[in-house]
Length: 337
Ligand code: GH3
Ligand code: MG
Ligand code: MG
Ligand code: MG
Image (cartoon, rainbow, N blue to C red; front, top):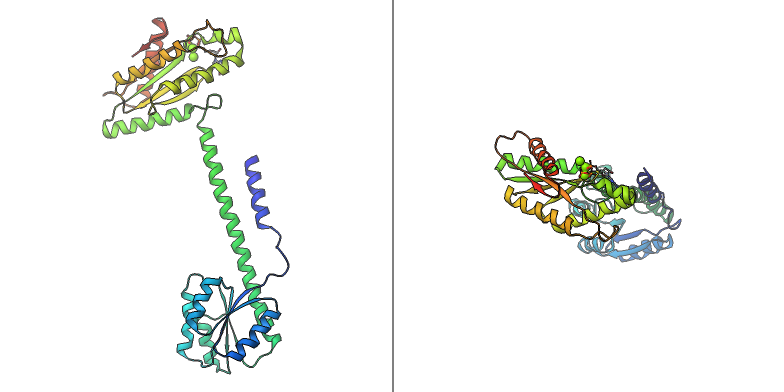
């Protein structure tokens, strides 16, 4: 729940991040081959505080748009016609050109021609002659839309970040739900999943697999003699002994208490027996940091391997558990199958 609040707070802060300043200049491109108009309009736009690039013809204009990440384009064509509408269409076909605010300047045109300008992709059209105030108002209208789009993009960005954080958090939660907190080993839930998985593979491809059920011998005595806390740290140490002596392909899980399960994928009984023996010996030979130097611990291990006639991975597990019981009865500190 804390994690959730933290993520939500982070997203809200990102969305409501204050504007850097009240006025941010627009990056404007002016495309015109009329030198006098260029000078005049550039002067007007710059006195509004915007930054202006000028292109003398369409091709140069399109490449400047890419280069300067322009937000608003003012395109002047003196001779209206199909050819000059090509610029508008080319702009809209560019990936970054779709969200550019495009104002087209023309001389007096008919209603039909004005419509075609919009159809070609213009957002606005100004017929000359016009004055500073008109240009300022039309650029202002464009700016409103540009800012709205930027805000929407920022929000999208924040949501994307939030979703990515959430995915990480979810993955972490999923791992936690599968991990034993004391030893860091996979827990019973994970163990059962891996048994199911190995079983499915066995059924599909006859790939053998084995499992070991392990229970520490007389562990109650450790608790009685040293207390439950030291008992816990011995369990952690045992987990590390197991980790250090199993193969990397063996999946060692803590079922609970001082009981463990090892899933050995792609492993027949004789190989699994070697694994079990190695684990048993490692526990027997280990000197425990938290216990008296004379203290020895041992583990009993029941082993079972997949075989015909089994209906379910539960059968295999039950067999291993029975073998463990046998190991206990036969004197502990041994592997039975
Ligand atoms: P054996 O298995 O050889 O028959 O004897 P045991 O003394 O190990 O007996 P059993 O397996 O039946 O009981 C397990 C004991 O392990 C009970 C409890 O004192 C201890 N134990 C179980 N879980 C934990 C744990 O999480 N922490 C600690 N410190 N001790 C635990
Ligand atoms: Mg037990
Ligand atoms: Mg027992
Ligand atoms: Mg025990």
